[in-house]
Image (cartoon, rainbow, N blue to C red; front, side, top):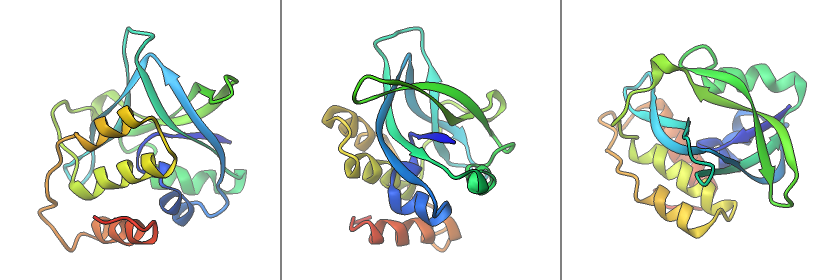
Length: 173
């Protein structure tokens, strides 16, 4: 399965910890969508979503991966399939201009909550993945400017896992 990662799974260390057989195909983008931190997580914070716009000039960036068939269920679980995310087909454009059919996990309408903020550690995963993959500088700057809040539970398992992945990627939190 070709998988378009546009949020925290852009960071290779994060995705490979979840899906060890994933391989990078390259950068890709989708027109008529923008990245928003608007999917309500089970921890109450915001996670990434690709919101549809009416403007072709809007563009969201991400990384295209190949996921082995035997590990799709693992990715489904890690992405929260059926728990606020749906696995949807999406056409993305690779850097060489080739349009590719792929899959992305998009927030279901009942999970979209405008004006939520991500925890700092989650935003840092997204920013670090964007830097690691050399997304456009203006796109990275917009991600960095996303308001984020401290996690009120510093010992939260997902926070500690994120900090471990960020350290493995050689980034400061």
